[in-house]
Image (cartoon, rainbow, N blue to C red; front, side, top):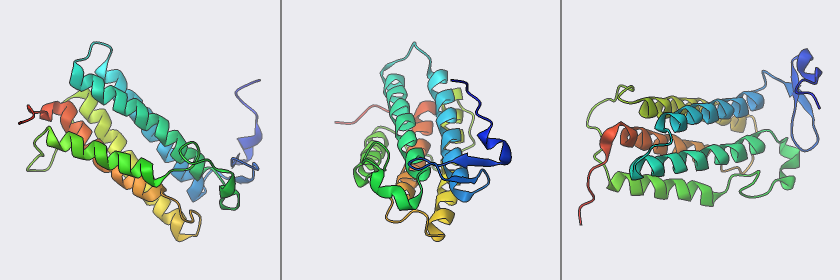
Length: 187
């Protein structure tokens, strides 16, 4: 099997579960393509951590990998025609409220271990933090695309928008942690 099919040469791409062809400029395509960009930015963050890590960096690397995998769930849901949503599987190809709740737990746990900035943050204190900030802004763009898609009736009762909203918040906190924001936990 070759990587190229030539099917997209006309400016269309196939959706999951049925393969309906839609424009590559469609808001749905733009939304899941933007989540794919975030997966790549998160890959930069994980690569910046490297293999020689302390416990904090190891925890961030594991969290980044989990988020990358979850963004494939987001992408699968977004790449599915609304008429075929019944074919989706919770946590595999459909975002769940539990996934949103897990992000909230992650945020709460990280915030207990670090001081929050008291002024605007300029990314670039560390490679990992900068890559996480890039992923955060990419997720905010994906969120805006999903809001547009929802406004057109293309998301139904999806948890994608709350997930992306919470994820951007988590990525902000993770970037601050990567930049050295952790402090000893007080007992």
